Length: 590
Image 1 (tube, rainbow, N blue to C red):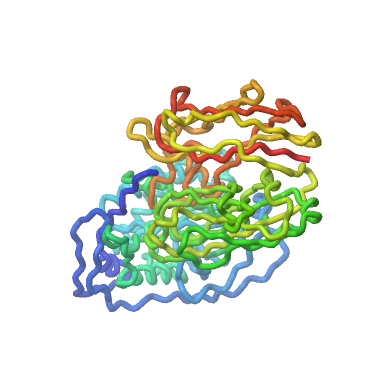
Image 2: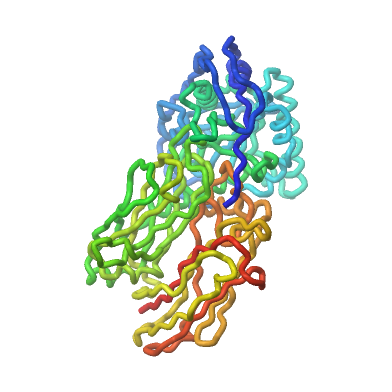
């Protein structure tokens, strides 16, 4: 697991409050540099909160689907009344900004129900760090972001001339990239319309944006906003360098903009937010459009523990014969306003079916799906994970036990809202997995890793298809090789003397800067306060782990013994440290 460097902020809340709210106080603040252990003293500034004046009336549905929604094949969301607070996850209200060159932009007037909005703030009290962020390459926001994401550049400088100069510099980069890379004049104008260069001071923005910033900055002054990290000091809420409004019109924290732990802050990191908001909207739309899904809720509550055993009463065996699709709908939300109250590490999470027939039903179990938890990241993440190839483990239906794991039970207790539901359905275009047997598991990726016996199995004669299904991820960081989280570990299976295609990492080079950044479009949470964006072998923080499938049908003999062998290597050489988490199954279908 990566070693995360703690956020290194200075507590300068009063300076920021006076900059934003035009007020000051005589309270003392510890402003000495530190390594992420923060202290707050006498934090009541006495400053009134600037409240937004939102009408927030829900728009009527005219029956016309906006063009951007049609291109995304997405369900447009109507404009909602705002929430009565500015917490992350609450509904944002209307606002209006004044932009460069006399333009004015209003949120509700431009609402399509299929776009998201990212706010990038220049906060001068951060000094060189914020200057470096604003001097990073902004052209990437043109080339590498989704067309339905808007960006608002806001300077917190007191001087109107300074604010104008600040956003003009960003405009020059953005406009130049659009001019250089897009030849069609209408497309140029459309792309430029996604970028908003705000002249207003934050407190002068009409509507919810000023209220949101003001409310969050006052929250940062409260003693109760500071999180006790248990022996490692305290952590105050970070400054709102970036925040967003997602496609459900909800506030999002945006998170860290560092490219890697200890690395520079970059506009490129803000670009991943729109992809993540699109992922969440796609899952929402998928569920809204579905019919004939049987859902069995295993967990739906605020929890602090990590491991649970839950039950579900499924249809009986006769009804289960008509089912060929097994999925898990997993939603996890860190509700805390201070991100450092969320879980902080990239841990293995999984759902297992309990297979023991003893008094302890989960003394034996089989893994069905796996995901990796994100580093510190508040807000909601949701995935629908397919486990249809392992449906055979629950084909008898009735009362079934499941073990849910969201990290190790010994880790620092942090609360989260979790909903996990099992989904059953009938897909007309697929075979049904009727049986599975686990062949191999992983372990320490050292010199003994390949000391294992062949797996011998006999398949039923009526099977119509046979597959090898592996759930695979590498963990740990060997001092010499960075195995097995950051190394090129490969996996070779042989069936009845025939070698299958080797499982090896594909795509970006392991360790490259943004391999997991691009996975935001698949549900990896951007803005994690940890080393989330660099490429790993076979997994990303905040993302489900893929089921890797190999077809065995042409290599096995039904009704007779078959022999499967497995070995792993490090870039063609011997295993080289860390550990491999592996569940490999032989699966047959009818």
